[in-house]
Length: 143
Image 1 (tube, helix red, strand yellow):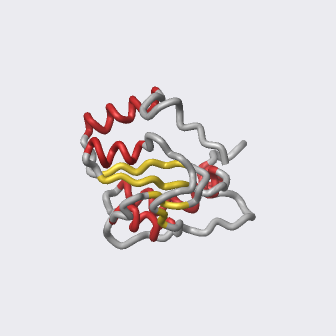
Image 2 (cartoon, rainbow, N blue to C red):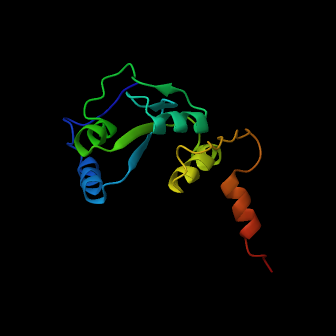
Image 3 (cartoon, rainbow, N blue to C red):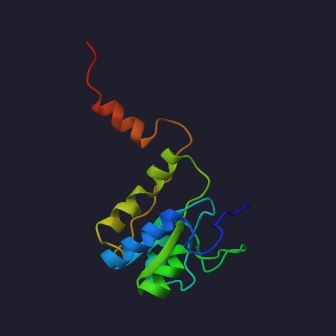
């Protein structure tokens, strides 16, 4: 695997914008989404990480075997004083990721982290995706 973290910590424009956003909003927690490791990554193994791991069915890891200079969630924890973890999605299609992880992500957005953990759904390899099924149900009839 080849990582491209940028030439230095916080050197990428999108990282700088996110840092400013966290400083202005002062959220209770931050979850970053990344790929392709298929785990919940949190060096502290905190409550949010454990909840995400249980709900997503992905293993909780405290480290990875690669250099990760300037990880955003590390900055959030150390400099902004906010709980932060990374949800590393596995190598699957966007449709499958949506179907599989939508329950836990929706619960997170509703502020339910730490409560009963929703389970990620298992997405079969056949049949239309959730998005395609929704579009089929809501499509206007053709005349």
